[in-house]
Image (tube, rainbow, N blue to C red; front, side):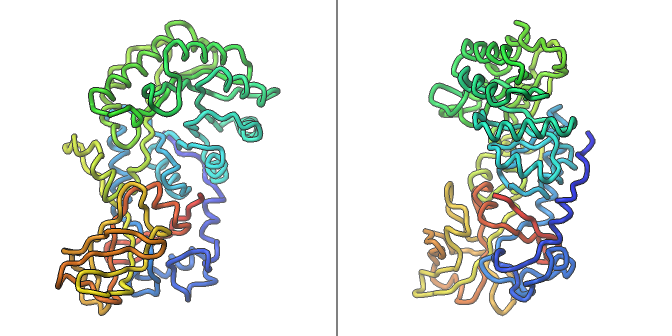
Length: 429
């Protein structure tokens, strides 16, 4: 599928000046543009970078993008990876260039970022009842016939508020009914009867157009393959019921969207979506997994579906946070200069992976070194006697999870295996 058109805003990211806003970058790079700094191909370890510094692996990033492109093609899935993970338009572009249908987002601000960088297909996985945001989205639709925004609805009251805010819109906003993953889950209608009522409320408007159903299987309570599979079959059955009752009857509805898929159960989504019955229109089976782009060394390493389907491939953790030992008060304790302001810590603590001695004698596994706690600007390390590291050494930390790793770093070096920095990824949180 063709990618969106080029974005001048994306190209202009290389013209941004490096300065104090971007932690970890070489102090002597101040005043250079990002493009000029990238062209210097400095080494992450010897090129003046300061600690802490977060880096993305160039090779692993490309591997993950390629693997999910192959996976979705193999299973007949369209792909709209969740952009909230990275909020990095450069990565959005690479995902689209790798075959993604569009980008999923969670809130209107994120949609504004995506539109500012030329993304034309956006799946907004939330009901929006904010009047100014709805009117802005409507103006985007009216200004460019190639722009498509699809939004959740899950209540009659929400539909009525959306309709009032969009009064006078030239184009209707496409919506999908969100089915909750259970009574104790997050948003979405709880019953099929409620779904029909919401669909009928949409039909009474001229500002909204019902185009499908969606939900998030990651919210299934006490999730098991059987529970997730059962909920996905409910979602598929809801699509068929809405279609069979004529609720997708609008002449301009060319396809029916059925969407699910976080980063923990996309194999089960592929399995159940393969069972979709024939509907009155072509079906866009839309997967939304986002954490794959960087993967991680904790939560998603344990939960990735590729653990269940190793014959399909394996994602590779692409993040490494480099910190420096600044204190070694005893043989069993050390402190590095990266903490809660630098490292994700909402699901798992960072893991010590490698030690890089200050004298450059070579990287070694961080055997006998464990992160036990984080302060704002320090990680607490427990060390076995004789394990090191020593004051001044660099420690490479693995992180979990992706969404709260990207958001702490506005400009992230992309480094090859030998440490050569070949690019910088700008984030917008």
